[in-house]
Length: 133
Image (tube, rainbow, N blue to C red; front, side):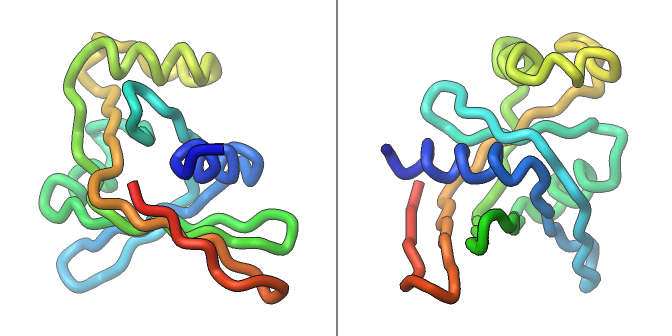
């Protein structure tokens, strides 16, 4: 399995991951659930009205952490907005449950992809596996 696909599968199996951003000098962490590959990039989704969107606009550096089955993953990188309608629609098609709250053309739906990302899968039972994408 290709590295980014392995990372995405881990996040989907974990179901919930935690996204950390920075607001000034204060870290902010919240649960997320979207992880989608579109055009060879790993995307997440949020709303432009949310604080997380505003924080990423000021400082695009972010980190994700998730845990499943005795392993955990950390993904560090920059989240870059993709403002194309087809990118937003692809995410909504992959996560139909979002369609009750979001639409591709609602002016609020935001999709972001990881750039310069480093994912590390760790456990107490094996050496860390590092995946760059």
